Image (cartoon, rainbow, N blue to C red; front, side):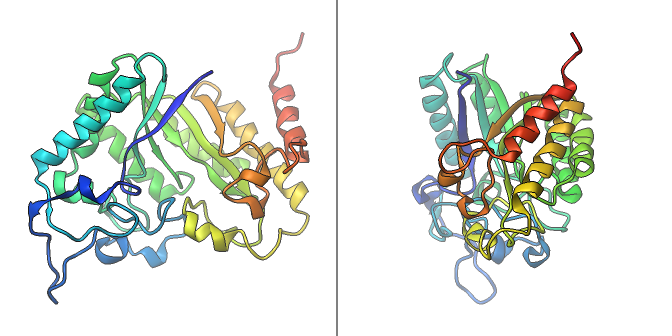
Length: 312
């Protein structure tokens, strides 16, 4: 099996002790410590964002809520990162082929910031991404190392991705592939996906579709978010009208774009085996229903593959 490790460095789900130390945290003009939540310090106008704010809530820097205590130093946090990456990647060296090294580090919204204002960024600085890739490459020089993010169908976020990756490439950082999560909805068209893949291909790296699903609930049809908390709302309200056909049409367009960009697309991973176990279960987002039976969307994907197959 093609095994992928997900994920080594992320702004969310990181235990608070990773960031803890003896340096006093920043304070606001009113005095209380500043949490590393996007709502508190991100200048990227979260209210304007339609594409999600991270899979587990609004961009917290660490733990499951913002960490506001005394902070570690840059040097110590880098050492903790290196030890973590070497321990995990080293344990599976030669067994796990690809790693999502850094996940969801790009800022949401229409602001000018390229990077999310996480504790990794605040304590280490923007080179935390380069360091993570360097440490992963040290631990397993043969592993394929990915940068992974969501909402790359959004032209604004995609532009930030291209800026980030070009900067890493200029520094000779060992980034080997782009992971595009592709949490989309039934309004997704061939043209939108085609444009996204065309622009990502300019980076000269393989593109891996890492978390594909297509929401067909009435909620959440305006964006491509990856936020678990928000998805509780965006998969409510029942299914869109004629959901089965719209889901099939969306998958057909998505895979038509994948086939067109077959030179760049090296891997497609669905985010769940069937609708019953999906994080968007109410949105019926996958190719198989809750009883593992193929849906019209499955047939649509197979049809696109057959169209692309060479004549015998």
